[in-house]
Length: 145
Image 1 (cartoon, rainbow, N blue to C red):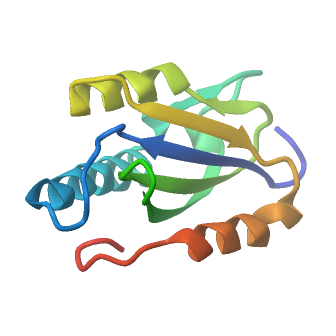
Image 2: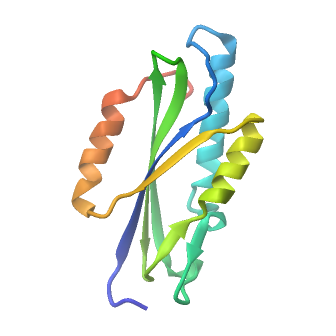
């Protein structure tokens, strides 16, 4: 067990590749699916489904989880998508997300291939940059928070 608490930071985008504009009735349906998925799967209670531990680590080593999300709408391609920032504070080294499981569930949820892109954020000092980036492009809809 490491002597100090460390963070693993993941910044990812989920784009369901659905062409829909905010005025369409399907728009809210797409947003609700995205929101429900991330709120459930990346909660502190359920994140263990996607964490992969190495070197003898386990879910017991996770102290806390911070999760931020923002909805963005690409005007050019008319794709609503989410930017998500996950911070896992832990007492173990070397955790990762099981990207193939996440992709598989997203593809199943939307009945087609969903774009899922992840970046590991190495520096803790990048936290504010990421959050500001997410805030800058965020769009507000009544049921999204």
